[in-house]
Amino acid sequence: MRYLILSDIHSNDPAFSAVLDRVQRKKHDRVVILGDFVGYGAEPNEVIDRVRKMRKRKAMIRGNHDKVVCGLDSGELFNPVALKAARWTTERLSEASRRFLEELPIGPIEVDEAFVICHGSPRDEDAYIFSDYDAYLNFTFSDANVCFFGHSHIPSVFSLEPHGIRVDVVRGDRVRMRLKRDCRYLINPGSIGRPRDRNPAAAFAVYDSAERVVTFERVRYDVEEARERIHRAGLPGMLGDRLLIGA
Image (cartoon, rainbow, N blue to C red):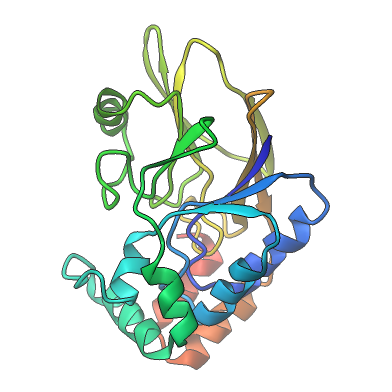
């Protein structure tokens, strides 16, 4: 099976549209989305409508912004800019979009007995995996051989190898990685709508479970247009400005 792995779209419709245009030319059997459909960007309803219209079978979970926007969490841990964007989004959600977010399952969940997905980490959907120690805590908590996660917005691979934990930040427009049989993995495909690795291009991945190969890809899109939509919407300007530098 070939899985299209998407994460952290964050209401950025120009970025999401560019990714969908790219993957139309690529074979995949199922779509996996690791949460944070909304927040930060100016097109929450447009993004959710695109997701709902995708014809492939989907496995999806909620992210921390999704649950704040639809009222399942207070957002008290958000910084002021993120919380302002969440409140803006809540006020503009259609009823159909609200129901979509409310009904998203909580990770971690298993997909086709092939891998596990979560938003922040297997231990806590709101926690980040940034370091080898963060990875260690999750490797000891979960026995999953392969886990895809989001939240940090950084394409990265944490591998539990016989000699310890290896950390790789994925660089480049297309990187192919074969997973070893004697290792376990925590894998982040990066963010479509709000990359934070100093590369503004939208990030996603494809996982071939039969070959045990993950392909990380980046897609250039009109970042200036996404920035201008955020500014015109009255959202905090820094949310648009940071798109330009992938931060």
